[in-house]
Length: 236
Image 1 (cartoon, helix red, strand yellow):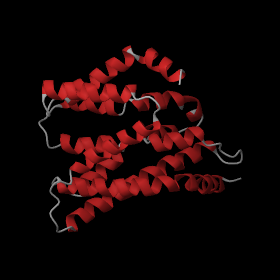
Image 2: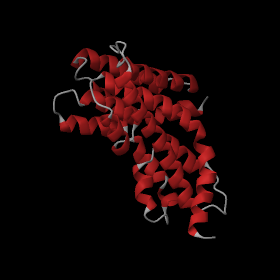
Image 3: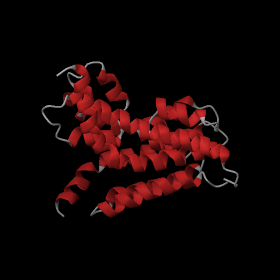
Image 4: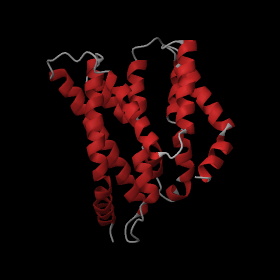
């Protein structure tokens, strides 16, 4: 089998697995592009950020950071905490990425929740090249997000109605994510810890400075109470 056939075969097998991701990424990407436009940025900003950052929730947060005072350390820490789960994704994929050659660099860069889920769980047919399959899963998912962000950024410049208040989309997105996790969990220990720490830090540090203390507090408490929480989950 020549290299062109190998590539086409991997793309053909990978594409159907990414179709469910397409609808969600396109909708969120378009919303993100319009949101960036509502903040006063040109379409070039969501286009470039979706290429070089490619982290949905982080990109929404980064949009606000671009309008804030210059604070590189705070920006780094916020980005690290939001995307910290990728450290564990990467460890889980070390063996699967082995032997993928130059594609490994892009697989590491382009890993998102959805690409990780597919590449980690899907049984790749033996006659399909594993490296190319994972490459196309990652590439297609990023393309969905990228194209949505560009379309949203361009469409945002053509929308004539008042877009004031559209920045609430970020708050709404995180509320929906929180509610989905709440409904999935049988116990809500971790969610209640997050809510309690957020309220305390909001009162103590104010709306402009509570994010970092909140994330640090949640991380600390989850680390301290990890075993009791796990034991409580095992008894259900």
